[in-house]
Length: 309
Ligand code: FEC
Image 1: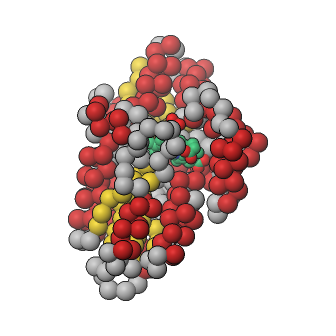
Image 2: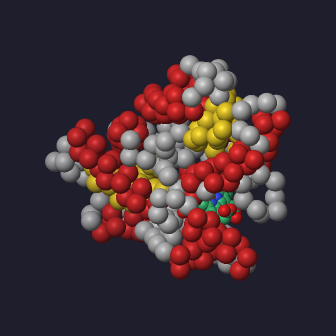
């Protein structure tokens, strides 16, 4: 008599349409609507990105479906059932848990589609999920991180090698620039593991790929009037160009999907600056529903279900 375990697959979320950008942005800003100028700025970034206006939604759908198949393969049909829960768009985290409750699920595991833990990112997702699960009497376990899972390191290092090949030139000439979403610098006072985990992922990928020439930089910092972790990728690129670096492979390690922060902040904004400075910039292919990444997620979910937190 095996009980079905609900799996809450959590991701950032993206608007349904251009008309939905204002509500989405207001949610990110914790209920404070953006000014007309801020809204226009964000809307125009969505309009510019390649690969469809809101590719994150389709990517998350594909990841949830692929994780479901992987869990069926590893644990048999019906052992785990995936539900989506998004941070800033419908179906929200709370909607996913409520859907589980409506289906009679008594036990759930939550996993976020980003490998490193921060109290301000993964911690926030898990807190909302846990609080909602408690309301429904669902036993909830969260996966905090999987930033050093061997298959994650393998999948990323393969992409680094592929990217270096595509950039051409002598091996060792191109600098591998690992990147992740910045957070307000106040996390440093909270002893938050985010920065250390990002460096650990980066170092492990570099070692696995046999890359000696690498650095880490932040990207996509918000405009909140407070200091954010730096240096930002644009600043780093300027500095590298001044030092004579001519070829850079950007390797996002905190993002797993093609979405705005990759397709705009790296592929358009950073690339344009690099070009102006005479630097060749390429980026690794994102993991999306890569089979090795799906194995990482499935392994982490099953590990948590069998006794993790
Ligand atoms: O493609 C898409 O539609 C969504 C792209 C997207 C991803 C993403 C991931 C992360 N964020 C993280 C932290 C913050 C903090 C703030 C913040 C603001 C924004 C805004 C947009 C946005 N984020 Fe995001 N983020 C994405 C999109 N993010 C749009 C608002 C305007 C702007 O700054 O561009 C600041 C909130 C505040 O004002 O207080 C903090 C972190 C991640 C990576 C982990 C994760 O995926 O959850 C951390 C994708």
